[in-house]
Length: 462
Image (tube, rainbow, N blue to C red; front, side, top):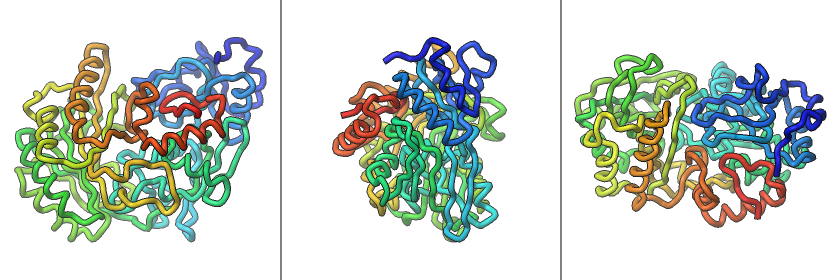
């Protein structure tokens, strides 16, 4: 299918309220550039949607002209460059309406978790966000949404009550467990394969504060802290959420002192219960090795970014992930061999992490969804920064080595949001079980038989 190349093709898009831009025009770069600069988009046309009507118009035009479509809010999950077609930018659609009586929020397509936190905090409520509130709510939730407090409350998709979505036929639909339940199923964990969500309604947590932060040790104590954490995760209650990371942090202003430019082992903690109980629970970690930096404290839930301290400025990143059955002694040794101090201070991966799964993350959703990571006990992810070709190749090679070495301990599956650059159909299918993938393919054939939504982590129609 071909993308538009002639000005007359754009006539119908004149009805759109937001900007409509093409390559070479002054506003083009602003519309197409997202957070992950490793995926530099060059679509034939981009629109800045201001509301659902703009998205309806754009999808009807795309269907009539057989133009492939991609959507982007913040671009945190942009791992695949869009080199033609239509890009719909939803970043202007940031409205958040909180209903404190029902403890719900109605969240527009381009809203970030920071917008939700700001709207919910005055009511003593919070959203089930991930490690960065700078990320968009919709894309994160469509991929399941792995929260900082996941072991305590489950996936973000589990709390969604309804969607407003434009399907590729250009129709604006309402989807919930009673109305279009199959569409509702596919949107919760199936990513953006069956439509473009214009807003969702989700439950909020009555959790104004939490206990969290990071325990940082110098690199020479990596093995001791890691083995202690691994044993500790087998003893803690479901509500204790944690992640072990090896951090090789560059000397850049975006990273706070004293962590800037350092090589660290860290355990990040998030505990929604009584702070005194949380402090007692993490005592073994503090006693395992000399602690150089300890940021664990009680905090407002809206300050959750202080736990993982992820970058807030755009950068070129290579992400990858793997779901693990368990962390056996051999798995621990392999991980240390690949990314521990023995791999060198100049190892190209910025972050290599293992997150404790289980708890509420292992329990089925009250309404069936397409999330397929509930059987994993741990989750491995990595990030490498790719500013130039020689470094990019080093990051790619290190990523391949790590995941090849850890493959014997994996479930064979990934999580769609952090899968990384999508490969062929077999590679993309690893984000779901075979049964769920086939069901998604059939839903794709129903809602998007022309495969207009084919960019990124796309499912092939049955």
